[in-house]
Length: 308
Image (cartoon, rainbow, N blue to C red; front, side, top):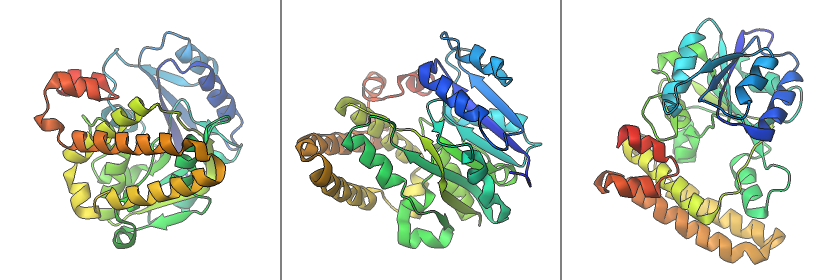
């Protein structure tokens, strides 16, 4: 971090207890980021006040105006004087005092346009929740270029704005985060960077505690939204490949993991896999569904109020 100017951006809304742990972990970073911007969407639980008490700037949004890509890009546009922009979500807790330094270290390679860190399952997570993190965020770091799409397919463009960093120059060069996306603005930027000749680095040494214990219904809705994004950004599937191959690999890995650690959860995993598949396929055909149906099937219902 010593060779670059680093700003940290965190969108917030009623962060609760985990937000206080996130703030505590931020205070321990060595070295600390030069600047922290909290973009708050109308918290009622003191999330914004806690940020101010920690000396961070708080930018308050009008309720209902948050946009996954648009809001993050709005923040980026305010911070173009910084070399690297780090994005964190309010429920991602940095695991040690070097997490941010590790995340931005790969930018010493001038070819790297983006990095993302390892997400570890939160304390007390179940086997299904834990496996999802262990599968997507392995202990080995890697650096990917467009040449790797033949081997990795759509996984080459995988990243996560729960804990990611972007070279400001590269982010702006590829057009920034696209507005009006239901989710997946991070993957769109990573794919554009790869196509433009930049590298994307996965930094396993940079770690946060961050996972979700979704219900079956929530899994369905989440994958419906992923399908919506893939329908909207069909060029990613066309240029990098469809996700079914990676999905099959995930299912095989999950079965093996559960056999070893929690075999009684295999029926639940089967139901979840079916829910994900059905949700995803419906999302890919969301343009032919009535608005009322899309709102019911989506995890981000507010998106349809603005973009239905």
